[in-house]
Picture 1 (spheres, rainbow, N blue to C red):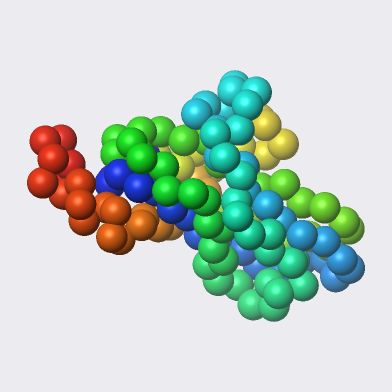
Picture 2: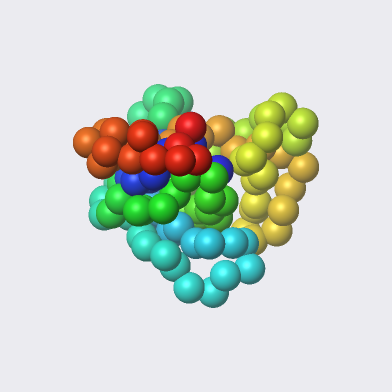
Length: 130
């Protein structure tokens, strides 16, 4: 769930898995059942750059009204190289239910949200802004 307006990216915790070639792209949707993307990442991450476990960023055009809004984000891979998405137990924390190939899991996805600082600051004085 967005804490501010102007969501501009999602960082997923990734670990290297299978060597080969491939890229990862983020899709952002309004819900798991939604058929249409709200947006896709402006960048594609070559999986070969995931050389060590850590947070890797996917950036989207700033989402104007992201405060207190739930999103469904999924990663699409191309090629035969893979990376593992970090997960925790299902009761580890709120608001990050994990899905595997579109099916919910009893797990939480490890991610961090990023906001357009300049645009998020402009909205701080608005009612409802946390």
